[in-house]
Image 1 (cartoon, rainbow over the protein chains, first blue to last red):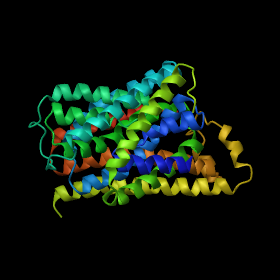
Image 2 (image 1 turned 60 degrees about the vertical axis):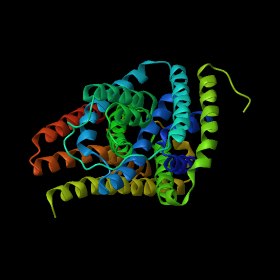
Image 3 (image 1 turned 180 degrees about the horizontal axis):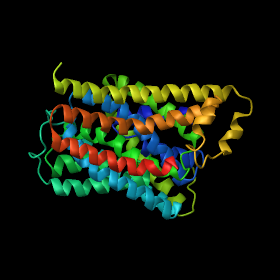
Image 4 (image 1 turned 90 degrees about the vertical axis):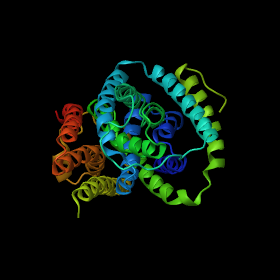
Length: 256
Length: 117
């Protein structure tokens, strides 16, 4: 599990994904852990990856802290609601929803590659009045928090396009600010699972330690790695995992 | 050091130290556990209310309690970051965003509270 966590942390940080998108398929498909427990563990791991990276982003002044804190009002409420709803719905339904999220993430990675990423300049944190569509951004942030609490991911895949395309936040600032918000959002959701006893200490501890080590190594390797080929390969892996999770949700098995 | 530099250092420092402390506690607890015979048996021991007897288990030096403390340290790091941001905004006399931060802290406390009992 620690090795699997290292793998998730390493590839997650190199490819710009939170660990959750990889941790949940690993825990459910490889180790047979029930979906809700996997989500609880994943949320704790997502805090670990986010905190390390956010520390660096804040230090380099890449985040808009005021924008992040304002949107956190919505993401935390969304995450708590998502965590509560996850406790009420069928675990198979969660698998099917997660499968859709994997498919969407893979599709986003393809589009991101085509458009070219890391455009835009880092921004200096001031007031947030200069951003457009704040009420819409708050609504979308609630939804992003909901996805996070319901499915155990960071929700960056929703937040970054919303901030960048809807609110006019420069892409680099949106990426850093989304990461800054993920720890708080995941923490709000994680405590809902923790209070239900769905964060198994050994599974969470082993995976989180691996994720932390993998993400630390990944952030150091990042400047030396050409991630484009890895991304192409990874899109295929995500499509495959999406199908596996869909079949698991439907009570069927793929050949492998 | 300017006030804004203090804010950046405080928030960044809490995130860094919090996650490092949590990882160190996890490594210690898991290391102690893996040295014990039959440690795999504990995989089936799902702790329903981990906080209720955490402190007494810590005093007994139980590895699982140290792992749990590491997980809690990681889960509480974002809350401490929010508190640090509120303090920073107050130092900058930015009362509007201090209020926003207090709002986020209160929502987080609402999610933490059920785990305490």
